[in-house]
Image 1 (cartoon, rainbow, N blue to C red):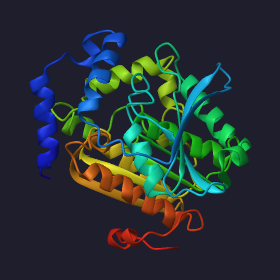
Image 2 (tube, one colour):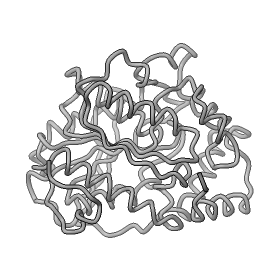
Image 3 (cartoon, one colour):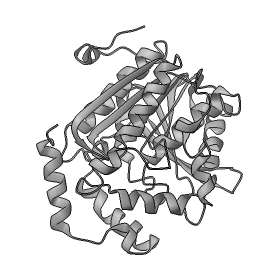
Length: 329
């Protein structure tokens, strides 16, 4: 594989900026550094039809959610996605992945709900997962007020958010969460044991490092035994058959590439409809780097096209879909 020139440029920007690895400092310092860096990488925050923030109830207290209604979304009965941001369960917020949510809203003529879920280490597993579940239940219960169709709700997330999305899909399969029409997993974390060979191949020099990923995980879990819990490591679930159809996006130069690929392979082997899309030259987090990496918006467009393919009654067909190679099922 060859590193994409756009990805190489982002890595050069990061090296030029300096800064300590997150694991060398405090959690507060990591969040401050991340919050200072992501605006320089994000793609355009394109306008949507409407944006609302509100607080909802959760088992651990109030949760702030941001709701985007995309341009072209129906005033009632629109498709909807719960989006869970990445950041290793430790960093990230409603702003750090806002451009992705806006792209999803507009490309899908949809409503996107993003919760500011609780972060570790102040709130260890399963607090963030419980916030995601509470948000999904809020969407289903309040579908009429939100102008969404409860039969066309999907879940999505990137990295640690992809981990939470995959677990919610398993909970939905088991009747412990509202039913889902689709799941969109963008370079998801699926195995907290962190033993895949991609940790060796890309453990240093490609953005997210193996030591940083271990630091994230160790802040998230309560004890080492949690790494074997399928709600932390969905790849270890005994059975994943029957979950919602999945779009899985992977980056070639990513320490999470192998576990994401292994999860997609298990989904396929157990009869779940899967669209696996790989960007061989990209790095972890590239979908949040649209200012420098045009493939970021392409990945979101392909995710929406796959969502439409899995749930053809949910989204209006657009002429641009033909260029992506998808069609109604």
